[in-house]
Length: 213
Length: 193
Image (cartoon, rainbow over all chains, first blue to last red):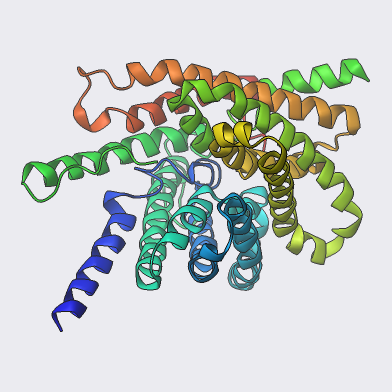
């Protein structure tokens, strides 16, 4: 019973780290491209988050189960092949749910197949960890990625359109849909996560997560 | 043909830069910038793999037509990049193990990244011919090198102890990248990709 509790607590910590304290986008500086170039509306962010989650779970589970049997020099390629293969059903699901948004995203949606967060977790984390940890990590990173892109997209859509989900009636200014706005907003959001982490460490809970990646 | 190649290379570094105007590849640029000695091999690998990826795009084009092709395109281009890396890694691992050992990290990260996999798409978007494709890949490699160099210098500034602790390091670097991207937006006046 105690062993199960410890196991649950550890997987909970892995999930929380992926979702917030070691957020892959805002702390790990991975997956910057979709957040900067594609997340300029909540509908876009929803599609990107869905594509990410539906690709992350199967690709990381595959690499967890089979990655250790591959020579180390071949693992990066295997990870990318796994994410590319798992991207296809994810893309089909996203197209079925939001066909116009997926078509509008174009290049940005397609490049989810080589998203650096997905590649990094599949190639470096999944082969070296047990299945429950990998599933918790995939869930945490999916929530973390979704949170980052949705936060960036909301702020950009409010600035350019004055409302969310295309229901705005005129925003404060133009240019919010350009990559520079995404990078600047990610900088401020990354600072907010760093601030929360520093407060946590000062309360004596844990040392700061520090620079990841 | 040579003039067209040079013009496209210049565009790849400026107005049509995948990195600054498109926002692609900065995860890898930041990693390269944190290890200044790896910038040159990183950039060379990015250039070579970009050329290879563009070539793969040309070869795959007849097989990726129509709706089915559009659906399979992302996986096909990513798979092509993976196979290119596999071939390069096997060859180096077999015939130049010392070189491979020193450059194992940059080799994988430069081959399997957004900038390289985006090459065939860029080719389609702009309707590039052979010389323009070669020029764009070369220009992207130079753009990657310059971006990494600039950010490696900026790293010290972005970790200044006088800065608020929450902004030190990555948050300041992201804002810095945003300002650089804003400057490049001045060349285009809007979205390119």
